[in-house]
Amino acid sequence: MSESRQFYRDEQYEICRAQSTDEYRATWWNYMEDQEWNQHPSDLDSYANSLHEKSVILLLDRKQGDKIIGHIGLFAYDNATGWISLFVVDPAYRGLGLGGKLLDAALSDARNAGIKFLGLDSVPAQRQTYSRRGFVAAPRGIIKSLKRPIPDLAEREALRRAVAQDEKRDQLIDLRSISPPFLPKDLIGYESTITGFTRPQLWSEEHMFQRSDIAGWALESSTTSSNATSYDGWVLLRQCSEGFGIGPLYAKDAQSAKLLLQAVMSQPDFEQASADGCLVAEVCESNEATMTLFEGLGWDDSGDYFCRMWMDGNMPSQQTSGGEASKHVFAVFDAITG
Image (cartoon, rainbow, N blue to C red; front, top):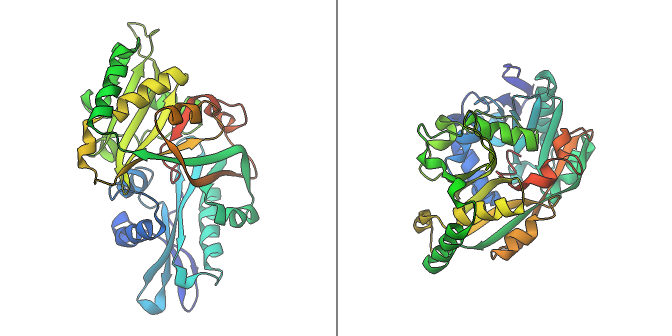
């Protein structure tokens, strides 16, 4: 990734690289609340710092004391795969062509970084904006936002009983019980195999698992040998503005996904949520078993969705129609990171 700070400058506006997350933290959080992107204050450090703290590009109004009026992120993963994210322009400055210049800066960064597969999850209103820059919608690439009330004490107890009766119950591993509490490399490899995303920095103790709101489970494979551990899936839960977000949820099959989802829905952590809080998950339309699984556990379609798009239609083989993601990805971590 190029370290050049400035991308564009005229008499009033400048587009430049942020030097740290602290430079734009307050603005980012205001945008997240205004746009209702359902984030948590800790999320910025989890994804921006882990994937390079200078991965975010800022739009400044020079005549307003270099006021930040927009930003965009390019998250470059380890395997020449990248993700466009955090694309926001202050409403007062829209319609001036600044958003296009901001997006072009991120695309230039992607080219300089040698990114082969460049993707994003677009809200419906921005789909044409991205199409004009060469992004193509993935086949069956709709990411739906599902919600449900936080389980009460009685339902959580029922979920725990269901987990206890599952034949794979002894294969469940509480990720918070692992010391040090970072995701085992085999789980990171599992994600790479089924999604095409290789991002060990994101799933590190420093950037994710030192957060007090993070919980999760892994499902050890029954075929694990004494010399190596393999897994049939894993799931994470974290706090967000609306309550708690569940994702990613990766699994070998629907039965394994159900066990992981039941385990994470039975967490005691929900006492931290407000009375009107809910659970949120962003699920993949391409996985035909997803809706049956979530609806069976009381989830509903919120009506909000994203469209997964890839530059020039080029995507990792796992993300193609019928690829591994369509079989094993039941919920993504966040549309912001893919």
